[in-house]
Image (cartoon, rainbow, N blue to C red; front, side, top):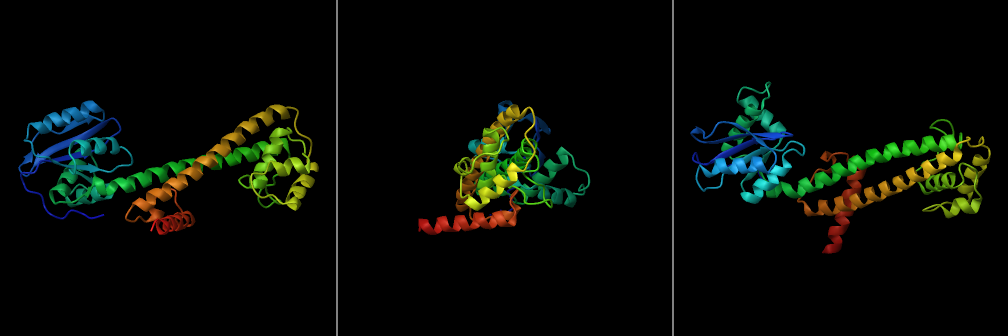
Length: 305
C-alpha cells in the first residue's frame, strides 16, 4: 500500500473525522485555518447530510477526508463518503494519529479535537492510505475477525460437551493427565457424543458407535471406548433430559464447525485478492493457521494460471 507524500495545496479543503460510537467529531479546514466550528455529527444519515451541507458552502471541489481507522467505528462513514466523493477518503491508523499528536505537543492528552488536529496535520502533508487500497484488506480482516469469534464459541461449546458427557457417562472422557482423553472434535469424539445423546448415556453396540462416526474410526479404537464405557457408573436419574440437551448442543457444535470451515475458504479467496498481507497480524490467526491459509492461497493462484 503506497503512502501519498505530496503536500496538499493550501486551498484544499480538509475534513478530519474522529469516529465515535454515536457521534463523529469533525473539523473542516484549509490552509488558512478552520472554515467552520468543530462539529459533533451523528453517525446516521442525518450526520452525513449535515456534513454535505457544510461542505457545499466551500465550493464544488472535492475535499480530502481524513478518517482514523478505529476498529469498525469508521466503516459506515468511510463507505458513504467514498461513494459521495470517490478517491477523497484517506485512512490513518490510531498509532499514526498518536504520533502526530506527539509532534503537535499533545501526545499524552487524547481528546477528539486533538485527534482531528492531528488528522488535519497528516492530511495536509499528503499522508494517508486511499480507501480503494484498504478495501480488500478490510474485507479480509472482517472475515478473520468473525472467524476468531466463532473459534472462541467453538472452544466454549467443546467444554460444555465434555461437561455433559462426563455427567451422562462418569469418567468416560478423562481430563488431561488422568488417562486417555476424548477429543470431541475428532470423528471418535463426535461418534461417542452422538451415541451418548441417542442412548441417554448407556453403552451402545459396536455397530451403533461406528456408524455414527463422521470420519475414520477404526474397530480397535471403537472397542477401546466401548470397553471403557461399560466400566463407567450408570447414568443419572435425569439422563433422558440431559441426553436431549446434549443432542441439541451437539447439533449446534456441528453447525459451528461448518461455519468455521466455510469462513476459512472465504479467507483464502480474500487473501488471493490482496497484494500481500502479514497473516499473523490478522486477529486470531496464529502461525500454523497463517501457513495453512498461505499454502491454500498459493495453490489456488497456481491452478488459475
